Image (cartoon, rainbow, N blue to C red; front, side, top):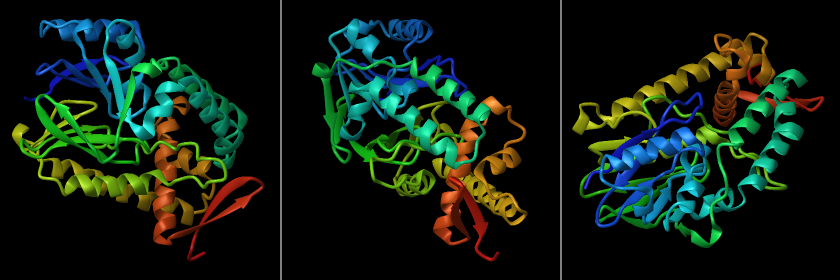
Length: 327
């Protein structure tokens, strides 16, 4: 049984988000959209097209704890007997949503945005945007939340799907692969446009985990799979079944990342050493309030350059500075 795509509005720059429905042997939903009336109405309409209501859902399975994928799960629980499932790594975001957002905001305000060299006005714009996004999610009922292993198996549509942990865009990201039918529910790991490697708050006394290198390693894992149909978290399905081989998408993303990484190094060699300066150079075509995703990508390029030994990092007056190793 193929998953049925239902697109829900998010009210975010990312546009619509896909949830996927399996009707048999029991109605199961993959992801839940954001918490909003518009998303709720679209979900009800999408289910009704298949003669179902929210009350018919037995399970909601979350691919990763980003608000456009889990934000509406609490609303679904409130109107049904559905249990929510998520990878064990993502549980805190679903059960302690407010606390997790508070910790991330504190990390960005007191640490990350200072390190990248943003001024107070720019930092406040980003923090305000994060606070607004946080309102599109809520905690689920912990008594009806279950976890699955990051290398486990899920029963969907009468078939066994392999759970594949693909950190990078999100540290708890999971994709679901059905080897017999060669179908992949790719969430935000494999999209037609490169997903941003979100900078996450590190654990106390731990170093920040470089997200883009993780994403690239996860993509290598996906590239090795035998896939005919990809059902992404955003946009229409693709794959050889739909006339677009997923390797073409992957290679295009690799090429784009390496090209932008080279641009980043060129700017560093030309005298731009602070992340905030580099964002202004590389994303000048975006309005200030929309450069946040660019900042995440920029940090990813810097992480790749550091890993390759092309640059070195120093902290000057609390701000990260990056220099070409040949300097």
